[in-house]
Image 1 (cartoon, helix red, strand yellow):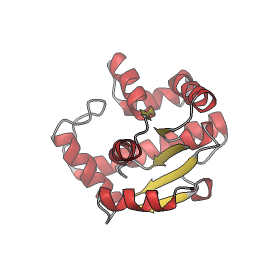
Image 2 (cartoon, rainbow, N blue to C red):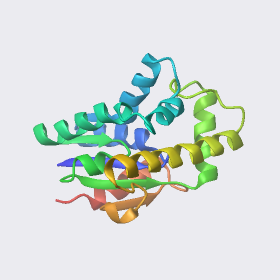
Image 3 (spheres, rainbow, N blue to C red):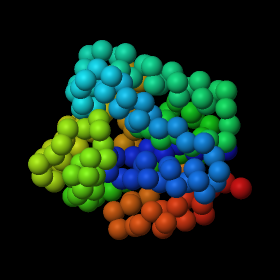
Length: 181
């Protein structure tokens, strides 16, 4: 079984993917980490990489080809990334959603702790909210332009979970209950 996790910024994709990987004893691949590494190697933030990607597809092509290859050559893994569901269509597709204010709070707290090295330090949750909106718009623009897909369309997924009021253990429980036998 292949599980793909997608969602909006701050919904908990990395946290849930890591926990699910341990719970199911399956390897986990993070497309966000790959893109973050690419941004870091270029000395820019992930948001700056996304802006470049609006006119230069190389920022997406490499990681998208990697996802497709994983889906063709391997089984029994977890993949988290915005378009993972699209590049590995045979996967069990999960979308994690979250209220915008809660997402901003989570990302701001992670920023204060220095947990996201590919993002600039934020001065406030409001600044994070503005960044989230810009990131969503950039993602939508790139994915529509390059692949003609809308990753925010919930009908693309087998399971949609609003993580706003849930702790990670509750989210994991919902996922485990919903996985095909």
